[in-house]
Length: 459
Image (cartoon, rainbow, N blue to C red; front, side):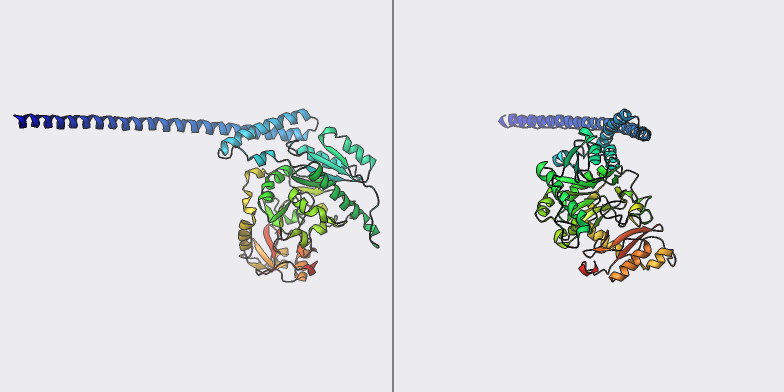
């Protein structure tokens, strides 16, 4: 009887376990089916949202295009200043919306990029038509707080001073106080203007970095036109200048930027590294000024900047198509190079939003590997063949080899390049390589692939 009762208990427990297992399995099965159903609904909802966002993006793009058309119309009519201001505000808001959608992973800029202020320091003297330069800067300046304009005047020229002061609070006006004649070595009195300019640069840059306490500055002179994307170019390359210790400046200028030597159709987005300090619209940091200020030269500051003691194997960023152009034929240099080269420099007319471009390829570690390997993989041709576009049975880029100073100068003159050297560096050269665009073809004038460095005796 005892064993019978025990058997019934065991049987009951076994049946109970089976029932419990069936219930648990059934509930899990229903839960999985429910989860699958919920997952399906969620995917449908996500797809619907993606479609709505895509439709909104198309709307914003269409609106941006329309605003751009209206802005161009307003720019052609200088009398509608208020209309321009409204359109610029709408454009900024539309771009903000579009950029937020098209790149959701880069919604916020870093605090450094948000807070950086890039003043434009305009050096002036006795040129009343500085108005042309200032009007261009103000026309294309997107943000007065991010890009304050500081005009530093030397010479105490009253007509120029009146023009500058007529802009009121749109800019900050400072005056170089030392109007004494500089001490000039015997035989260099006719070059005293260069001594005054160097003294002015020292004072003006010290004001920007010491008095106004800015961390970087864009430097221009009173005879420069600027391109529509001048500010985009400098604000976007600022991070490069900070992050790459092998860079020491960004320049808006291409010394060989004549219309016949650049890719006008597709070259406005091209940027290069250059061992040659270009000037004529350039940006440096306070860190560099800390290095240069104490030893700043009494004259010929730009050639001094090109000396190896200052450059220290560092490079500048420069564009294929210049973002500045000089209209100042008359000046301290008495028009040197102007009629032959400077007046033919092509100023970029089609704006590029460089903030949307990946500029990290210009970091030395990436650039040197790609650029040098590309150049020395190209077929070698002669300068006369490039000039006449004959004996070149292939399309595409080519390389012209040079081994001596005379060989370089011969090829440069034949193709219309500037053929001089400063501290052994050819204009726009990088590792001795000079890039140009000739007869619809990319051409590189390059030294031997085992290049060992610049020869100071070539200057």
